[in-house]
Image (cartoon, rainbow, N blue to C red; front, side, top):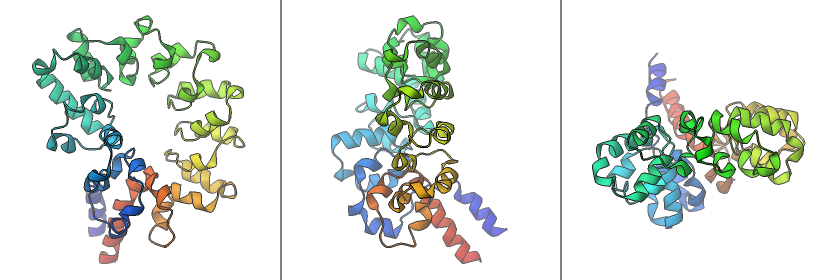
Length: 304
């Protein structure tokens, strides 16, 4: 019973846990790649001096918690970057700070434009109410579908809308000739209708597009259907919750080294000396799971 309660508590424990093996091998990690992974924030924070400005921007775009932004007073300095952060807590932080401090920033044009990138219906309604809509920037915003539906002509840019994952944007660009579209962008778009469109037009996909699509968590059904075209190294990085079973069913197609890109790396990490640190640095599932997994193992050893 005690162990079960502790397991529940662990769901709310922050991942800021010192893990000796990772700390001892920090020089082997690729911090540039880790900047793209929001669960790596506790490693990045301790090694912030090793980042260049470009990597730091990526870190802020993906960081998981707003206290980093607040503590360092970064909101206005890096406003254009932070507005593209899609983590729920950061969006809530932006909602509060922008609306409460609007009088201080309403005369700054760059702020008004970038506010349109924040994926929050609260912010979008605020922009609409205060006549601050920038259709170009709003075109990228997947939460703006309800506005785009009747104003799609205000954007008039297929390229922008292909980044947008709302049904309204997908309905618009999939009505166009496929030759007018960027298949590289579409292969990253996770909207289910977009995936169905790619399935119907699979004959237009070349090797590069299949590699991009292989990382799309919404495309698992396509993988099963066109298994000979997918890129297995990229599939191993796919974050779909059901990807492990698919990988297990096709282990004969995967190089053993590529398992370090999968969530199986969590279980391999404590058992093998020869770790592929480059792959671990790029493994979102590892950084999401490992700290909690490690803590739970320690608790089980204590209470069993």
